[in-house]
Length: 113
Length: 117
Image (cartoon, rainbow over all chains, first blue to last red):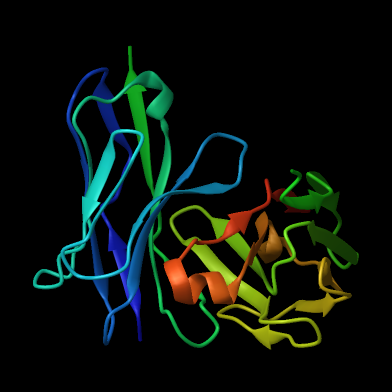
């Protein structure tokens, strides 16, 4: 069945450092891929998405490119801020059927001033 | 814009007690979902409702029941709580037609933190 694998955290970075959070997926066909962010005490919020191969999703300085050849959707940011401290979830969904999502286990990011 | 509203935000139950978690959305979405979030496990789907009047089991339905009361409301019931049900519960909603067009994603509530002792 479909699955999403994320790098284990926590990831601790200094402010202005470069961020990469790895995500790979297993799925048949062409799922859509997403990154969600969860700030402390809150629900998940959609950060960015990509619906087909080679698409690049971007938002708030974060980027991720849908790589079908490597089945990956790694999240990157060039210069992190303390306010980026949160848990990041990679997810996939299909564009047919019931649109259920498969989530990764989440990666906690802590950014130090 | 309230989005998805969950109540209560926190709850402590004794083993064997029952309770209902409430969820309501004001975006006229057709589909609603209940997830649980556990450390190291990510989010796991408990039940979902693709449209008003339908409900289906997700990945971890045992020990839970749901009711899609109307298009706005989707409740989750624990009939006899167990310590293994200690978790953070999230309700979400989505619009399948929007998914087909542009994959807008889910809208999540802020969660209910449940502890069963």
